[in-house]
Image (tube, rainbow, N blue to C red; front, side):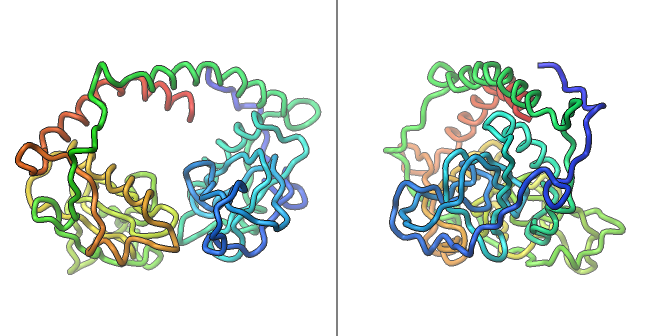
Length: 355
């Protein structure tokens, strides 16, 4: 696909009196109120699975589909085809956008633009209805106004190309590297002497950090940019953590997000630091960070059962072991090496089409 010529695009308010969309804010709803599993999507603020946290059983009036939902944190925007229940109330409640011209294709186009525009909002500055009414986005136009057909056609033309590269990427497996066979793996606590010392982090407030001479990364509970949400001044008397350590978000929307830090850093509240007890290669740390994330997202729940109470007690991850039942460092190293070498080119191609 050729790059889009945006030189003739026009700026539009997202919502409000002169905005494109009608803004709806869901009623007060919390995930923990929905205990019984069902078929209705429960949509909350999040970066994954179209914002769908789970499927619930409910008799209440649903939020209508054919709309865009916007996460209060990170601006993650998704098209919702079917009716759903949206998380409402204070804090990280979603926002719902309606327009009669919306369909799946032009909505996907707009979602990408919304995400890029609203990604600057985080835990310290969550997206509210007021903020959405003040924000604007650039969209293609024709003589009648917004060019909905252009956006729809663009996505339709893009879909076969994306599908082609996704299929190629998904097919890269058995010939290049062995699939994971977990039956002989073993569980390890993160504080195992072979792994990490778990430090509670700095627990700093980003809003109170000076930034006139920024030299130190500031890591918060985020799932982009290695969790780095700012670059701040170094605090006299407080030595930053060293690059190469891992950070782990203990709660919130991005619970379990685990990153290898590329530079020295400070942390916000609810971010632990994993300090290797021995020399661990980058590839192996990457392998471990993925296992931590998968374990966290599978067995723990944001705002309900977070990692705070578990990380230094019963939280554990599966890792490969050798014949002596010790951690198989070589296996993890080679596994990541093979994946990176095999997928690097094609994953870059897929990314270039999706962004």
